[in-house]
Image (cartoon, rainbow, N blue to C red):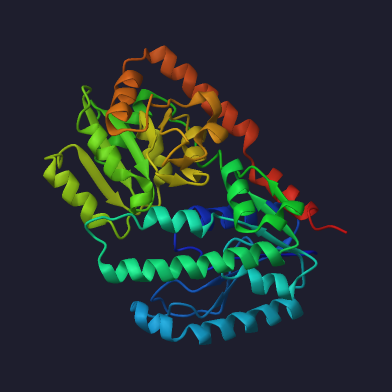
Amino acid sequence: MKNILLSNISYFPDYGGVENSLKYLSEAFRAKGYQVVILVGQSKGTKFERSSTNLNNELVLRFRFRPFNNDLFNTIILPISLIDFIYCLFYVRHRYPPSLALSRNQLVSPLVSLFFSKCSVYLAPGFSENQQRKENLQSNNINKLNLIVGKIKKKTHSYFDKISLKLAKRLFVFSQNMFEQALTCYPKSITKLEIVKPGVDSDHFRPKTSREDLNDLRTKLLLPKDKKIILGVGRFVPAKGFDLLIQACSKLKSDWHLVIIGNGRDHAHIVDIVDRLNLNNRVSLPGKVQNTNEYYRCADTFIMSSRYEPLGQTLLEAMSCGVPIISFKHGGEIVNATQEVVGQLAFFPISNTVSSLGNSIDDFFSLSESDVENLSKKLRNYSIKNYSWHLLADKLACSVKD
């Protein structure tokens, strides 16, 4: 049996687009008969457990990383984390020599490439030069120390971005704007760089089946049955643009209720905006949830409000659930891949402003029920046809064959 190594800084119970990609790629590889080893750091502040194997024969191997809840202490022991990561790589090379060594984080990719140079693949999640610039936009929750730390983090991650692109045998990104960012970071990467499509679990992310199904879900999630549900999903950081989304909703003519799923450093700032606009009865902030699929099925529309979004796994999840998408358009201060991912099936404001976004939401809510149902079916079919973890797994496995 051939082995596949998937590596990252974090994995479940930490939740995000990269963690999800590892989960679904692992399932796809195991379905093809591979033994999968997932090499990741321990979850922040949790008890360390070196390895665990679930019922699906997925081996999760962890290195010591962020064992404390205190960021200063975690920084102090980084050399120990590095040594432990190298130990794990030696262990994998001895016990589970991989035919494919895939990394999804720029901090782990260089060492993975050095250990497994003939089969190393870097599937880039994004690039710090762009991401950190957008995420460090001023907000009420960012002080001078955070800004200094952000600048140091940006320089460090940008350096590792370049090293990761240089050392990996093959490079893949999920969108054209990520392709261009990779070339800006390391121009010589063009000889081994390729765009691939991610996947989405169409069984897990599926549309509502009936009006009764919708009402039952809204009752379960404590959401109003008689209002238009607007959904946003992501980390609470300025890059996601949730401040813009809330402001746009505050001016809507329709009877609406906004749900934003996620958490992050800007949570207090988002709550403050909701309070200031007197929207506490019209905005729900359930935090991080494990049943995001149920919220998609409840939603009338999904909003991509990000200032910076190199791909947006949430777009794929919304599409798979047949939820119509309204998004800012790529250009100017907005960097996203909505047009590339969804094509003409999404709605775009005339301009990337709060008022224009609000007008687009109102325009969408004026569509007939039959038009919305037809669009929902088109989104679902487009998602199933174009985005598959199994196809991506095949592409990645073949990319390093001699």
